Length: 477
Image (cartoon, helix red, strand yellow):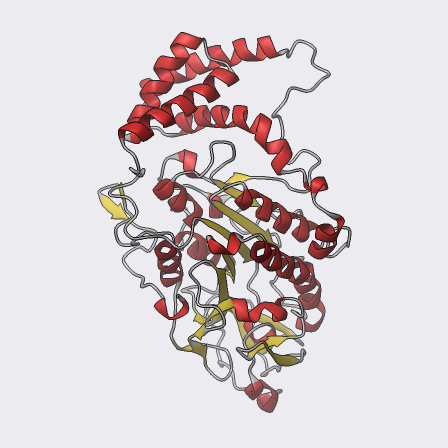
C-alpha cells in the first residue's frame, strides 16, 4: 500500500511541478508524509515487525578469502602436540586446491583476554581488548570449500547467484531510516571487489531498488557525478532541471507500460535520492571534519591501516546518519591481498590482520562512546575457515568445516561464545551454526521472524533462510 501511494503521489505531484531534481526530491518527501498519515507504522512487507527490535542499524565487516580460525580466534593446543604428523585425509576433498599436508600448529602466540578469558591470537592485539563486548559463534560451517559459492552462501543463504543478499532483504523488509542516504551501502576494498564481484550486494529477484549502493571510499569523490563538472558550461541548474524533467517523463511512461520490471523504478528513485544526496553526501563522506585523534585511532595516514580504517570511520558516520545497513569488505577476490593464505600463514596472515585490527577496535570504541551500540549491531565474519594441516610448506587450504564469526552491540550477550570445533579446528563439533542461523539471528534482532519474511518468486515463497535456520538465542540478551 505504501508503495502504491508513493508512486501515485510522485507522478501527480511531478506532473504539476514540471520535475527536476528539486521537484523529484520534494515529491517523494511529500508522498512519504502522506503515506505515513494514512498508514502510520505500516512496513513495506507483509505484516511488518514481528516483535520489538533491539537493532535499527547494522555494520557488517566481511573478511574475503576465508580467515583462518586456528590462527585468530580458535585456539587449538592439540595442533602443537600433533604438529608435523600426517593425520589428514588421504584423498583430496572437494574444493581443496591441493592434497592435505601434515598437521600444522599456529605460528602465533595465543593469550586469554578480558573477564571472559577469550583466547585471541597475537595477530589481533587491538581486537583482543574488546572481547568482553563480543559474542562468538565458534562453530560456523559452510556447505562448500569454494570461495564464490561460499561468499554467496554467507550473504544470500544460497550457493548460486540470483538470490537477494541479506542487506537487500533488510532494505526490502524495513525500508530506510533517512531520506538523504541509501538504505544499503557497500564499501569494498580499494584493491578491488570480492568474489562474485557485485553479486554479494545484489537484490536478486527483489525490486532492484534494494541492491547495495557501492561507494569507492578511496576516491576523492566517493559519490561521483552528483554535480555537473564545471568545465561543461552548458550544464546549468536550469538545463539540469529541464533535462531531468524530460527524462523523468520518458522514464515514467516507459515504466507504466512495463510494471513487472523493477529496474526502471529503481533508476527513477536513484535520481530522487541523488537530489537529496547533493546536500547530504558531501558532508557524510567528508572525514576531514573528524578530530586528529579520531584519525589516529582508526589508523588513517598509516599505509597498512589507512584504507580499511577510512571505511570503518565512514561506516560509523553513515550509521550515525541513519544508513540502515553498511557492509565493509577486507580484501578483493584473487590469490593475494586478502585472507586466502595458501602460500604462507606466517607471512601472509599478519599483514592483512594488521590492516583491519586497529580500525575494528577503533570502530568498537567509537560506537560505544557515541551511544550507537544501543541500537547498532556490528558483525565480523568470512566465507569459511582453513585447514588444520598445511598446504605446501606453511599455508592452509580452504575449509568449510568450521570457522568463527563474532557479533557485538545491540541485543548481544557480550562476552559469551556458542559452539566449538573439534580439537583440530577441522569440523564443527558442538553448536554447529550455518548461514541460515546467522541470518535468522540478525533478522530477529531487527524485529523480524525469518520464517515470515518471504517474497513470491516463480511460484515459491522465498526466504533469506531458505527452509532452514534457527535464532541462536545463546548469544542474545
